[in-house]
Length: 129
Figure (cartoon, rainbow, N blue to C red):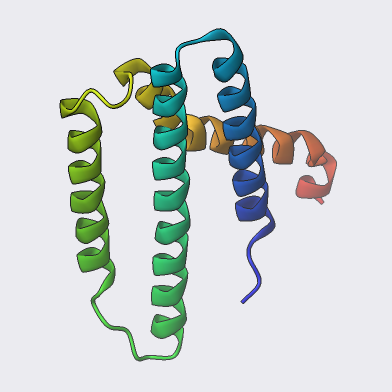
């Protein structure tokens, strides 16, 4: 199954942003903050990839008329696991909360950047014709 070009762009930007933020924070900020960015980024990218796999598998099943209602179960399971991991990271003071929030925002920022890139490449005259 071939990934959508927008999906590939979002993933690429996410990994590049994570690497850049971890490298910069590793040089200029505390190790706890850097670990927060790393953990938050990995959690958000992993959740984004798993959501993509879950939804694309579901839509392939729907197209084949054999849909199973596992998408919501997988979503809630992923949400619960993410909640437990975040609780553990915050309650044990393993990471800096602000760094964790910055890392968790990576995919959201990547989506906005990827859409901006795609729109800047699009010719509006082609859309009118």
